[in-house]
Length: 481
Ligand SMILES: C[S@@+](CC[C@H](N)C(=O)[O-])C[C@H]1O[C@@H](n2cnc3c(N)ncnc32)[C@H](O)[C@@H]1O
Image (cartoon, rainbow, N blue to C red; front, top):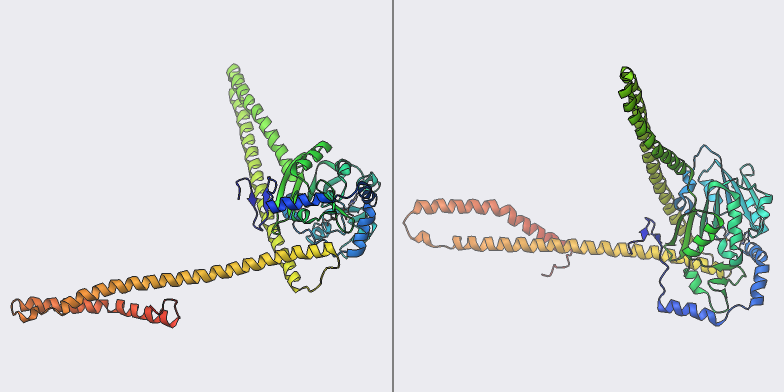
């Protein structure tokens, strides 16, 4: 992994480099140029964009896109909002609500949800969802390339808006209009959460000749379109519309898809606290000036010096308390952020595992090409899981083998040592110096010591014997030796 890459616990890699293409991938991209969609057909696709998406939902109903369970992990702005304050959330291009309903399930009870899409069928599916609650949700049709949105929502009232896999479906000439609509909807200090396909995503490389409309812009077989972005394109687009970019990276997912992730404008609690910190930094100079002023006044008005000093001390103490409280709040914010990040990672993994379990159990096959692509992609995830399990199994077998080898090497070493000791003692035992009658007392004494030593070493020899028998019983790989 390169030094500028960050890997998450769930395997996602965040990086700022464009994915490098292999020669084979370069050829695939080149082959797409052999048959470009003619201008007239491309224009027709643009005119009929809404129809194609509506037919998409007629065909696939709510079954195509998966719930976006990663949103609270990726977008801390969602969880960092104050839970006592009502938050207005707007999903731009909501489809059938795969972003908002997981948030409803997760208990974002202080959120009021607006969901819009230009496909009437998609909006109907949102309204028909069993989690749809008309008291805290409004779903409506709006075309983001026009001003429709503001028929249903007031300008500058949204705290958080999302644009998830929507911009890629829109013609590049209309992007600036979409970015502007989003900007007008969001209140100052609000955020726009963005995610979409990144340049050289696997899906981009899979397009065959006859699908390319323009550079990095393609038509799927059902007439819907898809663009693959770079970080720079997105930064330029949103900065021009007036946004401040908070985060903009490529995300390499487990399935090797390559996506761009973008968060704009800071979340409330941290943003508020940063304001407090800035005010405190400015006040620090004033407190220092006041200190100097107190010293000057006390020198001039010696009779009031004790009162002046007491006031100065009061201010200094209050100031120190304030600075400490601000530091405590920063630490609390940071630890709450870490906790939420951990919980979100945990939820994401659990949900991913249950998706995979469902996938393994399911026996349905796709009815069309995008369905087949989605199932293939999900199967790929399952395959990776299988490979990981196989790898773990292999690794545990290897560990057992290494432990066996270690036991065997210990056994060999102990045998060698004991053999050396026995040979040495044998020399003593077969010594015939007893034939010589001189110093018999000393020789008896020496033999006593010898016997004691034999006795003392008996457990060691027994232990080695027992270990040898155990290795044989366990069918150890070196039993023949
Ligand atoms: C790939 S889907 C993503 C849906 C949803 N955001 C999600 O993450 O599941 C793209 C959505 O964008 C909608 N869309 C495309 N162009 C649009 C436009 N000009 N105005 C509003 N919605 C549009 C489509 O109808 C479709 O529901």
